[in-house]
Image 1 (cartoon, helix red, strand yellow):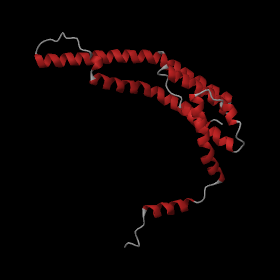
Image 2 (tube, helix red, strand yellow):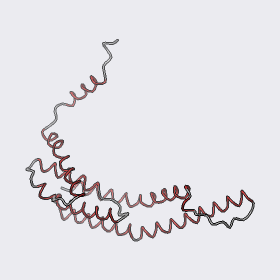
Image 3 (tube, one colour):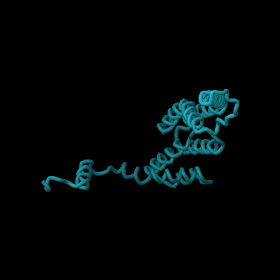
Image 4 (cartoon, one colour):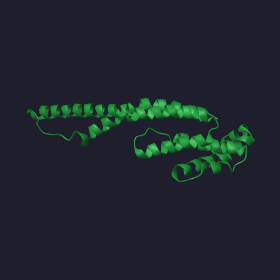
Length: 197
């Protein structure tokens, strides 16, 4: 019985052997994609010359460095909820212009992304304000009604609804709901960018 039992290590080693040897291309990707990821992270944080650093790598390594950098840049494009995110978005898109060879197609996608972001900050902001006020009124009315039911007297007390955990929880849910439509479209644009050469 003991002979038939294998350790987790033995089972894992058998699976690795079945996979076979890694190809040269896989080895290059494992070695160079993380370097590109590090370069993109440095570029987003500091005054870092991404183009100059990328040019230091010969083909075929450069392909994987660029791929790793592009992945990080794309991942850092987000809904412009504040000025810091807006700056990162601009820098990420500028960086993608440096690493993508089909710059015309990339710029077309960036135009669509910018329109989405403009909509998010203008009409989306109006939607969020309206939803906030509607939720605030709704919860305030429900709380007033609950007080009246408990005391039997009409409640004229002013309730700071915005500090109530119920309001905050509901507001987070509503915000997520409102942002989901934008995130879905943004995800499609990011996918399109990742598929560009």
